[in-house]
Each structure stands twice: as C-alpha cells, then as structure tokens.
Length: 281
Ligand SMILES: NC(=O)c1ccc[n+]([C@@H]2O[C@H](COP(=O)([O-])OP(=O)(O)OC[C@H]3O[C@@H](n4cnc5c(N)ncnc54)[C@H](O)[C@@H]3O)[C@@H](O)[C@H]2O)c1
Image (cartoon, rainbow, N blue to C red; front, side, top):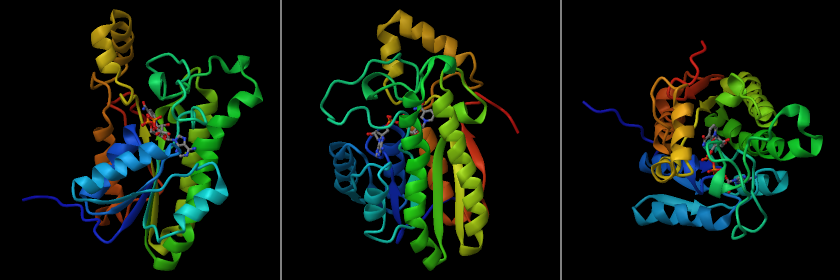
C-alpha cells in the first residue's frame, strides 16, 4: 500500500523559495507533480532552485520579486493562474539590496542569522525603535497579505485553492528578543484565520505551519567545528522533545500534504512542525 499526493496540473508559487525551507518546499511540490514558480527576492537563488527542479525532470520557473512590493507581487502572481500559494519568505526580509554584498552579522542560532542576513533577534523590545520593526512587518505580514490578495481572484474564480503560510513558534507561544518578528508572524496567523472563513465556500483552504528552529544555516556543521556553537545548540535542544534541529525536509512534507486533495476539509488551522518545542493545544 502507498500514499500518493498528486499535484499534477496544479501551479504553485513558493515565496522565498531560493534557499532553506522554501527550497525544500519547492522540491517537494515539484516531486508531487506541481509546476512551481520559485520566488525569491534574490533572483540567482530562485533561478538555481528552478534549474535544480527542471534538471531532475520537474516543472519550475524562477519568479523573482519582493513580496513586500504589492504591485510586483500582483504582477508576478497573476501572470499565470496559481492554485497553490506558499507564503514562506520571512525572517528579517531581504538582507541587503545586493545579493553579493557581505551578510550582516548576527548570532548563530536564531532563524535567519549567520550567512543568510540579519537576525530576527533584535534584543529586548524596550530598547527598540519603530524604525527597527518595519522590516519584520514588511515581509512576514504585509508580504503575506500582498501575495494572498493577488492569488485569491483566480482561486475564487476556479473554486479551488490552497494557501499555506509559514509562521513561527516565536509568534505562537512567544520568544524573548523577537517581539516585532513574533508580532508580524502572529498577525499573519490571524490573517489566515480570517481569510479562511471568507473563502471556504469557494473551495479554498488557508492554513499556517508554525516552525521551531530549522537548521537552514548549517548550525550542525558549525557545532562540529566550534565548542561554543555546540554548547549553544545543546542548550537550545533541551527545550525540544525530539532533541535535534529541524531540517527543511521536515517541513516540506506537511506543506505538500496541505497543498493536496486529501486536505480539502482542513482550514483555518495552525500546525506546528517544531520537534515538540511547544505542545500547546
Ligand atoms: N529557520 C528557522 O529556524 C525558522 C523558524 C521559524 C520560522 N521560520 C520561517 O520559515 C520561513 C523560511 O525560513 P528560512 O530559515 O528557510 O529562511 P531563509 O532566510 O534561509 O530564506 C528565506 C528566503 O526568502 C527570501 N526573501 C526574504 N525576503 C524576501 C522578500 N521580501 N521577497 C521575496 N523573497 C524574500 C530570501 O532571499 C531567502 O532566500 C520564514 O518565513 C521564517 O520566518 C524559520
């Protein structure tokens, strides 16, 4: 006996699909048969993932745009009919305007830190200023609103759609030093619940997947080289029921399931993929 998720004939857009969790989601959706529009603000990354998929026999094309730009998101998402939208772009948003510029310094161990760009950790909220908050809202909330708004008209017209937004346990159960990021993610989760109620009758499901720490920056490899990083990872893992960091592939399976036909009666929900970091009902 086997279980198959068949997305053939469907087109999916995955935002921030050029690396990390987004890349794994793109590969998984393509393996299930979807045509994948690989979005990333950094076009080289989007193109590399689209090439990886096409070279292995899948159907993908790069779709570079900045999700926080409503006009650009609308133009790209309405260029061809999209059946599945995965809002994955997040963390602190684009690190720098030039993809080849050096990455900003950030403490390893926080999502989006290290070689990938600025950290989602801003320190204590009491020491932040409004200007510090904008980038988190731009990508994690307004970017999600932009893409959902752009995708909905076709989904409503075709009486079918799947919208999945990657949020974070930082927004679900709280995480110190990440208040603006947590607030933006919690906002996106609330948006999901509201939109789900509006479009269920149109055959569209809208869900969130909330992540714990996923090793998208090679922390495990760094831990093998550095006692300090190893110690930090060890302390972090004490909070996880399953004592390892998540991998992008841990996330992709659930996304692919939620995108498929077997998930047609699942909407308005938030599913944690977090190794048991939090176990709230
Ligand atoms: N990695 C973790 O531990 C973790 C934990 C909780 C939640 N998350 C969430 O999971 C998602 C993926 O995380 P990741 O660690 O794989 O991310 P990442 O930072 O490694 O990759 C994100 C990709 O999105 C792209 N991007 C950023 N801003 C964009 C924008 N405005 N428009 C288009 N593309 C943009 C980046 O160029 C990058 O390629 C994010 O939403 C993040 O907030 C991650």
